[in-house]
Image (tube, rainbow, N blue to C red):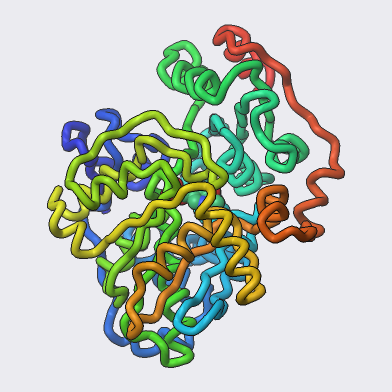
Length: 434
Ligand SMILES: *Cc1c(COP(=O)(O)O)cnc(C)c1O
């Protein structure tokens, strides 16, 4: 399979090139040149398939031409070796819980899939080692660090702004050791990102080591997210509730939503999607007006969705041939303030006993507001509520228990290299630590 860039200037890439490069050289995003459909037979029996069965079948549709079956199956099984249950919240509304992985957020799926695939290509090519650089404001760093932990042939450097990530987030990437190095930067998230960008264009550095990124635009992180949409549908089909399905997705960089749109293109009978935004509502605005005005992000309590210029927007445009009308046909949008999000968390907890995190709360409310009576609605819960303990406790006026696996990170010893935001010091550290 070849991958083309959404900007159509860079040459087409093989899967391996697209995974190692991440972003195309023309700064576009890679797209597969064709999207394979699943057979009607697959949908007939989907209610009897396990997550692992579905992961293997869907992965083969994406990557089967480029990775042999046995290896690909192993990657898929390892990446999705945790529960993704669908639970009923109230009549007609179901939640797909994507937060039972190592860092309790949905990014674990993509990060784990990508790490295994990258490791496979490193071994195939007999490369010495690949260094992954990732700048994080919190959640991406923890998913990538845990996804790559102990994976052969890869060393990960997580750059994060000192004092600007939550304690629990920091613990999730500074206590791991092994092939994970945390770099605590005296500066902002933008400083971290600037350091990573400078490293990628530094010729001297790139001659000495193989550098790559692990951000959410990488196809090996992005495409596998389609898998759980099929599994959500399967769990409804098992109960014969699969008619008229609509799915609400808490959206930031739009990777999760775009993966759902891929699943639909592959034949998944989802009627339509609802993109739930917090106050960072550029996509909502685009859906309603056809005008796209990226802007600086604003801080909200659903902070993993604080994105002012969503990177996967280009993928959605490309998938629909730039047609606003076609996009509007498949996706509607909603946007919520912090106050509204808090209200939702409180009300749903009081009425149903189900505890939402701020991201899932946006999607729940969007579904509630948009779903018609004859539709079955699924919303995606992208993070465990305990990751946002203070906010959630304030909403419900009760203590929120932190799962042992999450609090265990806090008990471990922090190991981080302290650096200024000076590029030369960062570069020297990369040389010294590899
Ligand atoms: C990253 C993230 C999102 C947003 O997902 P996108 O794919 O960037 O749209 C939503 N919720 C949580 C908890 C996240 O970590």
